[in-house]
Image (cartoon, rainbow, N blue to C red; front, side, top):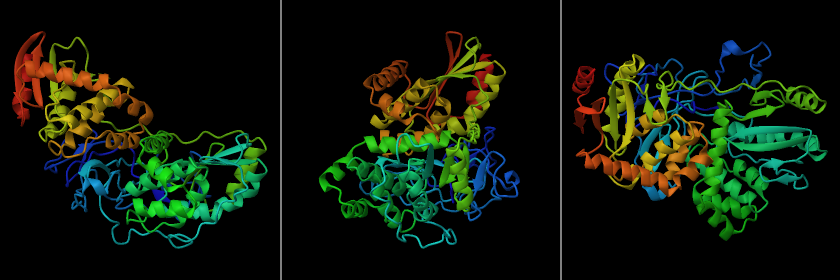
Length: 518
């Protein structure tokens, strides 16, 4: 079983990173590019296991599961792999990469946003460490039996729409334990699929890296030609290690050809945005459902984290077919968002009657923005809690189109009632300067999937020209005020401006001005 880092966890910006304590308190010697965050996944710990290997919450754990790396690491331990290679954008069109450190169940571990190529890194961009190998019942890339062509299927569903039992099977095409499930377990379901007892639905939880996303997109494109499951089987059979080129575009095209896909149709589908959005949206749904590892198989409310006991798995299916009442599935743990305990309303934080308003005029491409999230905002949250101030986000997107796209992302998250302040922080600490290629719509949607947000709604919002127009209009207001660059901080007591600061902020001076305004 492959464990995922939490979908919401410490930010990651730049080549060096550490995680920002959810309390908001910075470490004594913070790494140059950092942040904070949570895990929306339900804890899976040894303490939660019953003697038969099941979880108290109803999840069955595969005892062969790969242990999480470095279980004793604290939230401020520096990473071992800070030598991420900056790659050419043309070689990495979709920049999500592997989670090098699997999350200890119950820990917070979303390392987000490092510019690499043109992508936002969800995790650390390194090759697997020595000893970070998987043990399966067969070698990586061993043949996966071809799913019976006579079985009814419709896209990602194998089986009839009116089957008695629907099984959701969350998987990553780079996960060897998922290949093991496809090779060893799915064939044992075929008789139940054929007689209408079971429908198996493949759900994407593409967390291991960029090739996970690309492979999932390729399989969905095969589904458009009615060959989802042949491609599913062929992709698993072609595994060649994590992010080692086994699912590079040329290799996926070869696999597509081997299952009889039309090369022109396949290429056009791969180049389109819709299947990528579908893969990311499914991954986000997995985050919201509390999925923390692959494969995760849900049967009538019973969650299996891998299938080590096939007899028990089949008995659970048969009991569900016979009318057993569904059990409650585990749910995602609340994210440890540092703003979670603060009253927020979209892009505003604090009560409307606070005597002092602090305006944060942001350009998310500016490297100076990181200090806002890392050192200033923890202090602002304490003053918000006391009722002394309210804080308002403002756009000062002067460094180019990516600044506008990043501002639009925060606005869109706020529009859907999501964690706008948390996303604001992630983008702030991820800045690599103007034109670095980080803040593209596709990369921001990858971030959204890791946070469990509504990817399809965000995609629609980012395509809405009025959102970017609003960010540009607010930027024009900032320049009319004489603000030279973001970040800038404007402090108001009532309607009267009492202080302003721009560029590389001196947090102590900003806080002194805020406190004097009271």
